[in-house]
Length: 385
Image 1 (tube, rainbow, N blue to C red):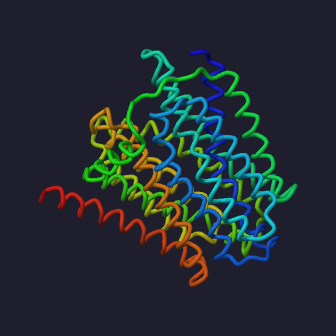
Image 2 (cartoon, one colour; image 1 turned 90 degrees about the horizontal axis):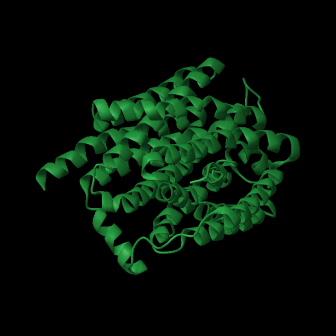
């Protein structure tokens, strides 16, 4: 597998994943531009994540049925159109609908990563997948920083236009450079969906999905309201400074291999508990010291670290299940993961409206309490069956 193709797939994964996060530092500017309330503006990240969950559930499994290059190029083109629709938004309703479409179509990373694993020789598979996953993570980390800067300098619509153009460039490059693939399975779409329903009965998947969804939900609670918090005293920051907080998430990149080693040497279940504790502690730091800059920085590091450890460890648990079901298991996990993210974004606006920053911190902690409860409740159910 040529190195330029590996890097192209890594860039594609990062750029596609970034489409989900560009909106977060721009929410205050969007609300002002479109004369929208905080609650209505909060539906932008909420619907993006609902769309991503739907795309993972309904479109990603097609990677096993269809020719992957064509599917990837088609979805990138659709994402470009959805981003263009967002840039042209005359009102908040239009932008909310466009955000749903962006989330639904920008699921290319979940197709690209297994395709990279398929194309790589066995002796280099881990390195290739790691490179593509690194691209995805860097895209997520830089999205808020880039959009914060672009929004401050050129306006929020410019960010959507830039992202749309980049998707079209990547679609053309991938069409020219990616090899064609053969369908992995021969079954109908209905049969594929039915097989995923059966997997939902697996307690390991249930526990991983619940804890992962609630952890990512708490993550979304924070990031969906941070820009509103920072624009008020004592900070009075704009979208560019809010976006810079995304760079602090680089610590999360270091957490992935650490979580993997902990899961291998000890137990993925122990690593999940440690990740949830770190995430909960981050919200305590936000609550007690959020009005001081050092408190926000420490909290962001703990939040990103905790969510990353929880996610990687949950995926390690899922991959302990039968290998032939890994793609569908991961699709289900990611679906619930982003349903949790959408729920967190939705609830965060209510927490903010009712109790401002205290409400945001309380909402994040409540979601983590649900995650801890799931660790024990689902285990008890498993023992009874």
